[in-house]
Image 1 (cartoon, one colour):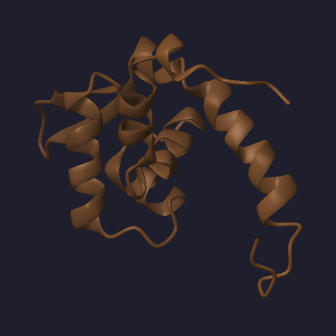
Image 2: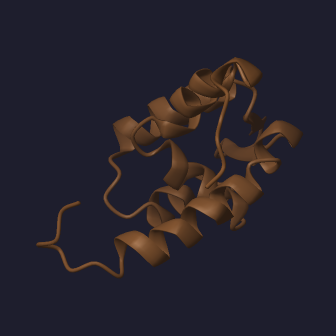
Length: 113
């Protein structure tokens, strides 16, 4: 097992707060999968409400994880794209997905560790 020295990564807690907010990981994962429009992201994050999705998009934009682009046409088209900072989360999302497949999905619902 690897030992971690907390002093080696002072931004760790902040990073976990950013990507660990409810639904933030699902939004990032949907966007890594190619979703760029509000409806596409919502459909990929099964169960998220429009209000929560709107807030997460604002939060992630404020953190520099994604950028919002408004196309001035009729009707107005808004797209969301991951920034370099957001795309760099691909390995993190992949690692969490792998961990979830091994440890969360493999356990029966009644097993709590």
